[in-house]
Each structure stands twice: as C-alpha cells, then as structure tokens.
Length: 325
Image (tube, rainbow, N blue to C red):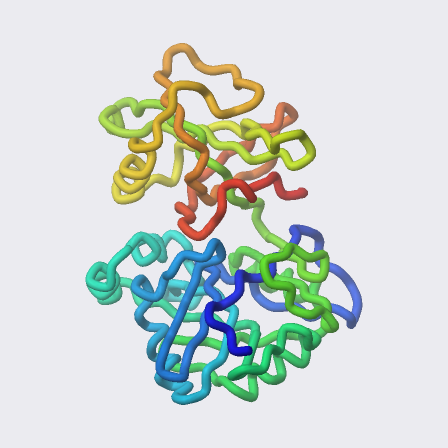
C-alpha cells in the first residue's frame, strides 16, 4: 500500500562516539527535521511533530519536479547555510516562522534553504524501512545526486573519532553514529542511532519569563526553562534555570507573541524554583520549545552560561527531557 503521509522520523539518543566498523558516521546538520513524500505530481513535507511545512519551504517542490513520476519518501534536515557552507539554525529562524507561502517566498530572497537528504524510506509503493542502513544509503545515492536546493551528504563506515575531531575543528554541532545494520524505526528513539555533540546543546521547554531591564525593559528579560522528568510519575517539568542571552529583536518579538496568549497563574515547574524577588515572573503553559547552548550543568541542576540558539516549532514539548552528558 502506498504511503499517504510521510512517517514521523526515527530519533537518536545522545552519547559518545562509538568504536568499530559496525557503525557508520555522518555530519550532524543543524536545522529542521523534515520527512517528505516527493515526486509523482504531489508533494508532502512534515516536521517531526507532524506539521505541514511545505508552504514554509517551497524549494522542496524543485526536488519533487526533479523526481518526476518517481514518488519517494525521504528523511532529512532543512538547513540554511552560512558563507562557509555550515548549517546555521539561527539563520533558519525566519524561514521556520513563515507560516504562509507568501511570507516564505519573501524570506527566501534573503535566506535560501537546502534539503539535506540522509535516508530513503520508500520508493513508489515499496517501503525500504526494513532494509539495513547501508542498503538504504546505497539506494539513496543511486537515486539522488546533489541539486540546486538539495544535498545528499557523504557517510563513512568506521573512523568516527576522526570525523568527530574534524567536526570540532570546523565548529560544527557534532556527528551522527548509525549502526550499519539498523532498520528505520518511524517515530521511535533507538540506541542504534547516536547523536554525538561537540558542544553541549539541547532543547528545553519554556515555563515563563522575567521582565526585561534597561534596553529590554519593554519586553522579555530571560526565559525560565526546564525539561520533563520521565522517571517521575506524570513526567513533571523540572527547572533548568534561566536563559537571557542570544536574543535578537526579531526573536524577542516572536517569543513575546507566542508566550503572551498562553499565560497561566501558577508556576509549571515541580518543585517551584527559588526566585529572585527583584524580578517580575510570568508563567506560561509549557508548550514552547527552544534550543539552548551551554557550558555545563551546575550541581543544583541548572545550565551554566546558557545562550539561546533559536525557537523550535517542530518539537513536541512533552518529549523534551534532559539529555545525558
């Protein structure tokens, strides 16, 4: 039976770079995860939480046109590249936030995107998810070469430590490690895939904000952030501190527009964290997800030296947990 919608993507666990020839390695791209059905005259593209993103990234139609009558299901990352060819999540923000084709077209003149395709999930009516990783990659590279708005990145078997070192030197986020015999498991997190990060960085849930001071007195000062604890009944939201750096004027405006309508009376964190009395604290429903870079965790469980990287529109806040160090 043909796929009517692209499946939700397979997910990785965070971990160290594994050894051995049973692992393949790829560069970790910094963008929005998108699974798609392209070609055959009708294109579909979904974020990892099932949102239709085709209007935001009309460049995907170019790949659909290239495929012609051949309909395929793909997994990849939509990225915005900087002048050095590195993916830049902050640069992608205006494109992620464009909810109409008109807005996406307007922003596309300023920020172009590429679809980095790294997995093949079906060809026509034939699913490929049960095939091992290396076989899916072989079929993918036989099917696609790099195009004007899409890339098929290289992978290597073994040599993960060398690739990780190269990623660190290049200032990349990290690498992905995937077992060469692993099938594709839609909507599941698997130990067969690992994300190995050069920098400490992860998603957090926004639980509130403090009012700004000085030049930011009319807007947000810092975000209260946290993560869900899957080991506790009800998966409570644990406090991870505040992030007040990395905000552009556009991001501040966007965050304020998202957070104002979801104000709540009580603090969503369990337990309620100690709060500075000099600040005004506003609480919100824990539904907005942000990406934060930080140096390490403190002994009391807060992030040290946090910097906001961007806002995630493609993440389910209920699935955000603390990643292992």
